[in-house]
Image (tube, rainbow, N blue to C red; front, side):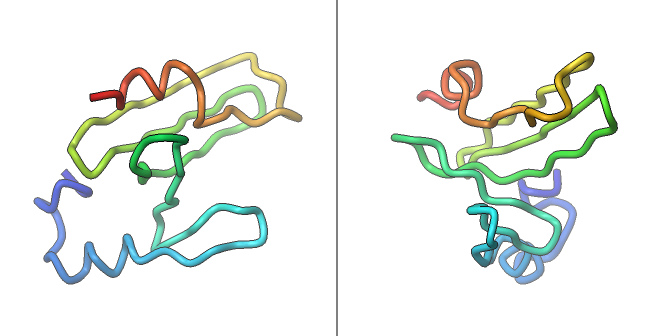
Length: 92
């Protein structure tokens, strides 16, 4: 709904997706992170979590979406966006 343009006026959504580079290598907009995928168009979304749990929700410009939720993960190693699962979900 949000990234599909049904929740906010188009000008606000454009502003939200207008990302700027950060020191950690990601590009951050207004509450949305741009995640590059090798060989694919970037996806936009956000991640959140608590020690032992993490959730990532991303959507492509074409409208494909993926939500990854993990538990019992090693909190010193954050979940990666660029995985075979995510690439397969956004492939064609």
